[in-house]
Amino acid sequence: MKRHLLKLAAIGAIALASPSFAALKVGTRAPDFSAPAYLAGKAFTFKLADALKKGPVVVYFFPAAHTAGCNLEAHLFSQAIDQFKAQDATVIGVTAGNVDQLADFSKETEHCGGKFPVAADPGAKIAGQYDAVLTLKPEWSNRTSYVIAPSGSIVHVYSDLNPNKHVKETLDAVKALKK
Image (cartoon, rainbow, N blue to C red; front, top):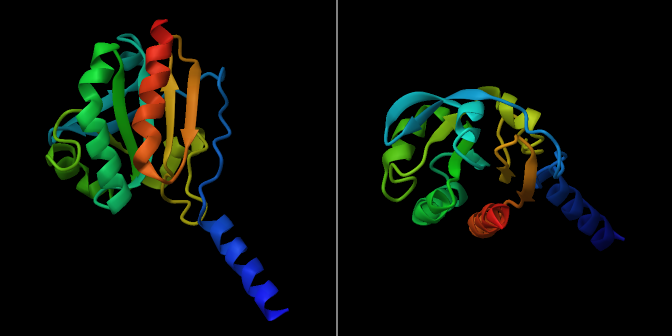
């Protein structure tokens, strides 16, 4: 009985720590947003509507700058950025965590390397519109990636706290738009 209760407690803890599943479905219109952002340490305002005029947009939410999984994910996106650009796609990372560190995060070679912008989402307001809020820590965004077509329609959603597949998932979806 005690072992059964411990198992149930562990399952409950995992459920609380897991991200909520992205509620925005393929075909849904992506919520428009603008946010303070950094590219190579320089501040600017990112506007989704402006980015969509240039082609598809990958909006990837991540929990917090300068954390292990987020560092890896940013580095993987920076390594693949030329492949996204070849498809006329814009990549923007959005986080509600450690927003005071985004200027450095955006320029550090082991993270974004100045190759794509990251936007601040204090209070996870944008993440809330995209249903990309970390369940255990709702003031932070979870790791959810969206591919948005130039029409503003969501064409791909991938939500997984493991950062390893987000680049492949989103790049494949961007490439599929060209076909």
